Each structure stands twice: as structure tokens, then as C-alpha cells.
Image (cartoon, rainbow, N blue to C red; front, side, top):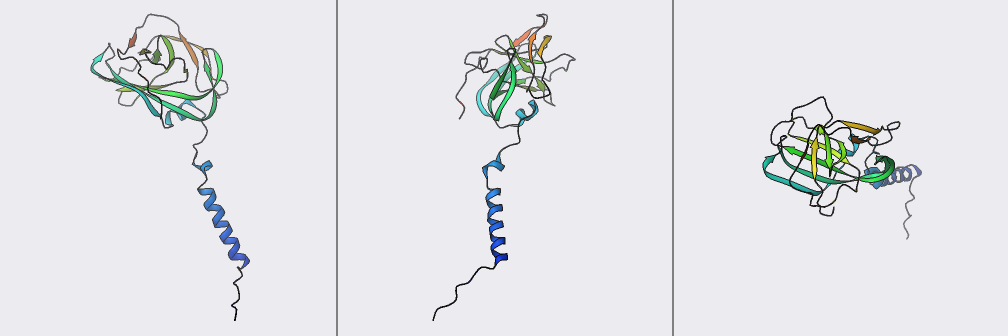
Amino acid sequence: MSLPVPVPRPRAALVIALAAALLGIAASPLLAQRPPVRHLADVKELPGTLVAKAQLRTPETALRITGYRVEHVALPEPHPAMIQGRVTEIAEGWRVTVRFGAPLTVRDQAFSLVIDGRWCGFLQEAPDLLSADAVCFDASLVRPGAALGVTYRSIQIVSTPEEERLLGPDAVFADSDEAIHYCSSRLRLRAPR
């Protein structure tokens, strides 16, 4: 005697198919990706891989630099940025955090990151004023032995973000009245993992 083979009811089969499809979509790596980068603030929120750091025994310079941290940040997709006066497609950046031994004095001048004498980005002070960070997109600056510093020196914006599609402006120093405060510990890079 053979037993009848159960035939799935159309409604149950539809529910099973929909559940499987929803589970497949929920597990999809496409949904796990971060939203696209539109602004510099979005880049600062991306996870990074530590590639260099320095911790000084005693604070240095008039701004009392105590160290820095450099993290490699991979962008989810290429994005245009202004580098050395040209719009360039970039896929990575370096988040640089500089630490200080005393709270910074907030000024009405731009606070800038400097690498080997070149402007690299605007530093944003942390709420406690004991650190400041910037994102550098110029790969030619982030290299072993480079000197990292900060300054309140006046800058001249070479370009402005077009329709907010660029991640940041490009700038050069307008004068040399204000000192650049360099950390004595040069960049010692390790490959991102």
C-alpha cells in the first residue's frame, strides 16, 4: 500500500519561498555595506586600520604634542577629491589623530594638519580639546620618515568642493607668520592588515 505523497499547498509554498528569499536578502553582503560616502564626516566614521602611532614621553612644542595615531581608511567606492590642484579619484585615506598634553586653545583661525611642510587637511578638535583629527587623501604625503605637524598658519583655499561632491578642499599656506609645530617622532608605517 502506498501512501499519498503530500502536495504542498500553493499558499504554504508561497510563504516558504518568501521566507527563503527574505532570509537570503537579509544575509546578503550588499546590505552589510555602509552607505556611500558623501562628506568628510562620513569618512571619519569608517573603520580604519592602524598603520602608525607615536607616544612621546614628554609633551613637545608650544602646543604640547604628546603623540599621534594614523589609520588607513578604505572607502566603500572611489570618490573624487582635490589633491595638489587636481580632481583625483581616490579609494583610500588616512585618518590622523594628534594628541596634546593640555587642552587646546580654540582660535578663530583654521587648525591644520601638516605633513612635510604641505597642508594636508583641517584638524577638528575633540570635545575635550586634548586631540584633533583630520583625514589626508594625498598618498604621496603618508610615507615612512615623513614629519607630522600642526599649525594655525593662514591658508589659501585653492579649490572649493563642487556641489559637495568632493571630500574636501585643497589649500596652500598663505603666510609663514605662524609656526608649524612638528612632532619629533617621524612616521613609521606598517602595512594595513
